[in-house]
Image (cartoon, rainbow, N blue to C red; front, side, top):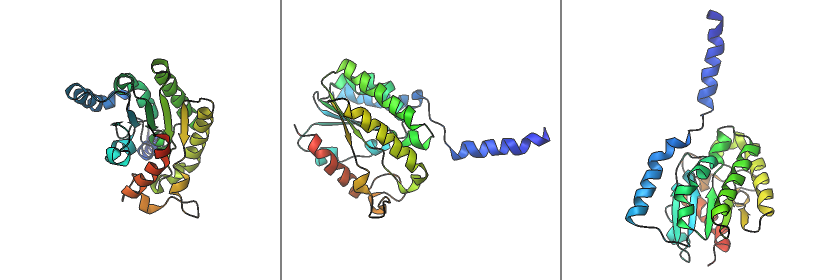
Length: 219
């Protein structure tokens, strides 16, 4: 068994370096909180639903940023795109939103999902929403490039390319590029657009997202 020890050590290191994706049930408590809030204070119908991972969850200024529309925030931090697919029956479709804004895929890339798998998960999300709500628009926010995740740059860009191509085939689906306006002249993400973790957005980062989205959210 002694000869196996170096191999096992490498496996442990690899697992620690590449966090495994959580199973959908991991988010059950978050979803239950949303459902309890819905029961106590039903969200408006025909609103703009924001759903996805922590960049959505931490977007606390939606009502101020988009005063012309009713908004619902259903972001649950750390989630992947497949989690939004899994929970769409509970925290998307019942609201009957006129538009769904989705930001998910960032954690997928960091967990080494292939761009093809992430794009397939997006297709599953689009099809699930449109099977129930055929007139609802879907807006996909591109996977951002973050200073702390630049090792995943190529995978993120390829993911964006695939999802943009899918959106181009569907009139009720829009891909919004938030990557380009977040880069400096050298093509690197601008640090001032991020919090100290160099992953999540600062107020300046959300301001860029707001400007990119606003033309697509007109009543």
